[in-house]
Image (cartoon, rainbow, N blue to C red; front, top):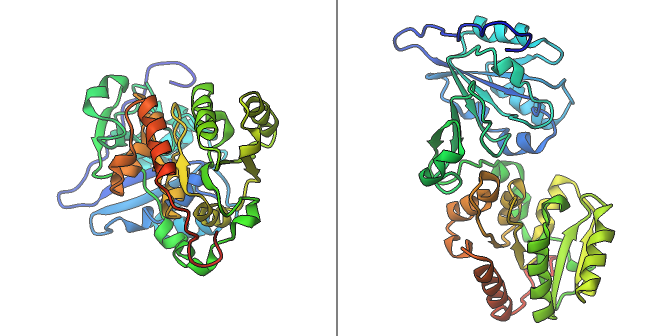
Length: 352
């Protein structure tokens, strides 16, 4: 454990017969952060007759609507920013938490040294980190049968807990209903996209674009000259390098970049694209939910590891099994066939 010495005894709070299960969530992201965007309604949806929900925040209040919603919808919301691992572990024991969720894993702000102290009898990884933690102090990982099929269970040190459909929750129906109103849709010209072209898009961070998938995209652009690839300056420093690579492949004029946008604009502008082409080694995750909510379909090619299978899970959950492909060649053929079979019809409202 942190500081050396023998590991402390595992927390083992007693639960009275018929008593409620105390469930704790620990996160640095109960603020304006993608995890809060996705999960903000989850905490308040627990059945209070059966569960007492405790949220332990590793970040101070940022004044966001996400922080306000989460803190107001649970019975106990505790700011533990700046507290030591020992103090928080003691607090978890005092609160009698039976199941403690780690919503950070190995992401920014994580507090794994506290979990290593074993303050709760059952400790679970969920949502924040897309992969096994490889840690003896995490017992379970919440996932689903597409993201983490049983035949790949050897890739995890945790026991797999499969949710039906997709484990990757989102709050879009509640937080972004405006996408369903065609009058809110922007025109393609807002983003320098030609009305007559077929627009492929990928709104992931640029680090997810590896040479193999970029080569495939460029081959598709070359074989389908009336096609545009729409990317995001995320970060802006990546634009120059990708355009240079595209120029060497003769397709730089078919690539359009846009700036990073607010969450609301980011989701609504997805209606301007015809098809989302996914990155492969690390898929679209939150972005997959965003683009599907905008009504734009997505082609994805799942790999073995968890981060390369989330988009397939989300696609299958909404019934788009036919857009999940099994090889690079199938990926290319699927996208090209969709392009060639498409008749560009502007959507209702302002969108092109």
